[in-house]
Length: 417
Image (tube, rainbow, N blue to C red; front, side, top):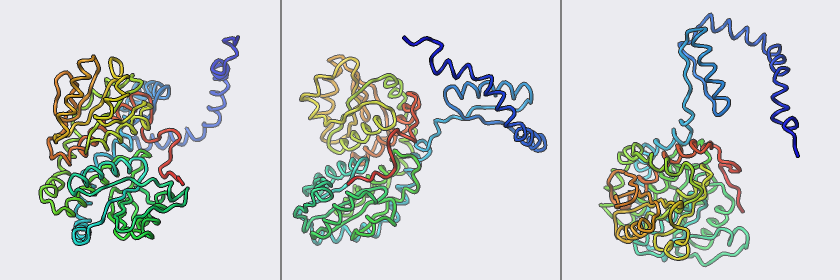
């Protein structure tokens, strides 16, 4: 049995005296120089930035500095992460993107109306593939055209090229550098597909190989977890479909999206943070246009919050997955105000009746926790819901002791074959 004196914590604490002596000697000259500089040009305040035990040391610093030097000292709010700073920019990104791509998308829409493809193939990974799910529902409901997601390993690993002539292949990628996406889009182009790239980096290989490139214009996204680039992808897809279908109503809805995105950022989703602070798992539910953002939210729960979440269609969850639903296993539901609304409401009522907890983004449902967002056309609602969600996910990540900017074991560009 391990004795209390043999633990690493005990040994390191015992060494503190020697550590302090070494530190005083090593830092003496540097501290003296810094002290002289601060006396010569006193700062108007002191800002500390720390977490956990280090933040407790910062609390000591506050009292020491304010009592000995009478300089106001405050602690930074680390909740102002790259995710928190970047996501509100989505409104400006979308406005800029709409203007920049207007002529290109109008020309592409005219071309696609004149020579309609026999189907649409999307190619993406991660958050971009969740945007592709949104594209499937948007294209099939607005244009009546079969839309499917490519399995990149078919081209990149198996070396097989399906028949893709006369199709429209849409590659969605923030970096435009993932080998499997490049292999699939190259195969589609060589097989006779018209290729379109939705990409943030216009110098990327994906942008270079596409017939048409639609820049996402999201700018640098420092956090590993994509946020504004995902919203930009949804906006680009809406703009493409609006022009292709020559849909004035959809164009007008997109034009109003930037202002609504700003309002969505201010939506109060604090009940989500409170309810999920100690949760161990949940389902994230959507249907139709909302299913893609359900997938995205489930991914962000795992990436940034260490919370296991699975995304299901409101129809699919009624099968085997319903066995887990009940007290202690909450649901987050993304509801659109379209033909799917009644079925989603029925599911929510059923779960509430069984004693389950449900959080609903969209119209309020009796018995469920309401997560508000600005009213909008159904095609725009997913963007607003995920914008409000990102702010709540950032807060939840910090509440659960994680750093949303640096999810463990993840990199910005995933080199998948």
